[in-house]
Image (cartoon, rainbow, N blue to C red; front, side, top):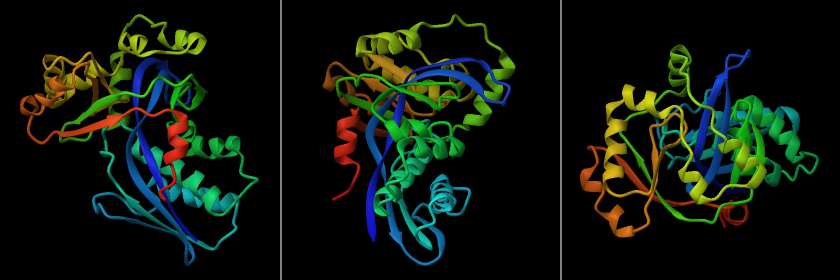
Length: 293
């Protein structure tokens, strides 16, 4: 038995950091949005235990990888086969704030349920397994447009935004989420609490509202990593109508009202930047495209 699944990325339309939690994490209020940039995750019943193959040798292929952890966790709960081989083709930038590792874990959990026909594995049970793997994993089990509370792992699906083209720009560096949140906590910034998350929950969100959102981590990341700030400046000068850091960075996503504006952008970006033209996705598109035919 073998199947291949698309593992889609995300951006954060809005990200508030409300303060530290007793468990060492931060209380968040965020709006997630799926995008069609994806990794490919292939699963095959084979051998014994979990074996992960990753073409990018800079990435771990053992239990340090969330895809490996997800398969191990799933088979511990539902030990229906002796072994699983995972082949991971990475396209989502690592350390870019696009959730690639968490998305891979979610793809493995859902893929194994499908491949092994584990009907007793409910959505809620997969979400519980995913929450232990990483705070973003529950979102990737839902997808589309969604509100994230708590550590970002308490997911409330929102009415899907209309799909639209966006630009993803990733500088040639990785940003450590843990280090950004650690430094953010040391700064104890005094910021006004936004009503964006509450409004989204009560009324849904549209692209006009998304443009009024924010990412509380942006000022810190731009200060620590000048290359990230240079990308922001280039996007603004190119005429983007919406520019926001995804997660803790380093990827910026931008919306352009005129496609000719974005065409001039690449000449203004710092060397080594990766530019990807992508499209946001609703939950129907995710379900339709999740399995590679």
